[in-house]
Length: 309
Image 1: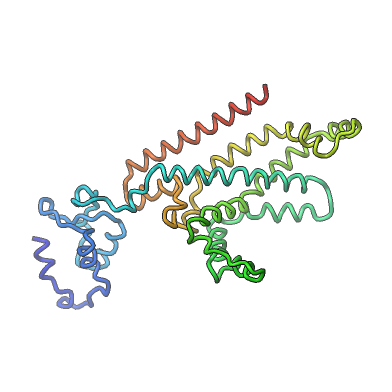
Image 2: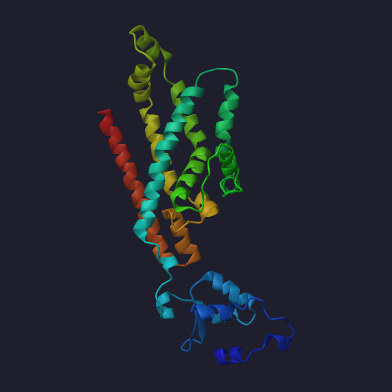
C-alpha cells in the first residue's frame, strides 16, 4: 500500500537531497496527519500542511485530502474554535470605539476647516490624503510605528519619560491601536461630508441668532447641529457598516491577535473560509453579519425618524 511504500522510501536513492524540514515526521508527531486505509488517502486538516507535504516531494496531491477533525478522530484545534460570541463582542467593541470617535473628530475638523482662511485647502488635503492612501501601505507603516521599543511612537514617548507598551502585542492595547489607526485613515471622508453640509447651511440663521443674543454654543446646538442631522445619519450608517467590514487593518497589523483580542467578524469569516476551509460555517457567518448590519441600520433610521417627529 501507499503507506508501506512511503515507509520504505529513501529520498537519497533517487538523486535529490531530502527536504531539510521533514514535514511528514513533524505532522505525525503533532497528530495532524492520519492515513485512511479505506480511501488510501492521507487525511490532514490545514491547507498549510498540504503545502508543506508537497514540498516534502514524497506525496502527490491526489493522495492528500483535507479532512474534518471528526474524520481525524481527535478534538478540534482550539485555534479553529474561537468562540463566536467572543468574535461578536470584539466586533461590537471595535464599532463602539470607532464610530463615535470618527464622527466627533470629523465634525471638529469640519467646523475648523469650513471657514475660509489662508492655507485651508492645504489642511483639508492633509486630512483627506489618508483616505486615498493604499490601505495595505497604511497598515504596514503603522505596524512599524507601533512596534515595541523600536517603534517610532514609543521612541517619542520615551523622550518625555513615558514607557510605551507593545501596542499590537498586548491584549489591552491592540484593539485601541487598530481603532485609532483606522480612525486616522478614514476621518477625512466624514470631514468632507460635514464640510459640504456646513457650507450648505445659510448664514442667515446664525446672523439672526446673534442679533437675538445667542452665543456660539447656542448657535451650534440649536441651529447647526439639528440641520446637520441628515448628514450625521448618513455618516453614522456608513461608518457603522465600515466598522463591521474591517479586514485589511486586522489582517496586516494583528492577524486577529493577540489572544484573539482583535478577531472581528469579517476576519473570522475569512479565517473559516480560506484558512480552515469551513465554507459552510463561513457562509452562515456572512449571513449573520449581513443581518446584524441590517438591524443596526434600521435602528439608526428609526431613531432618526423618531427624532424628526
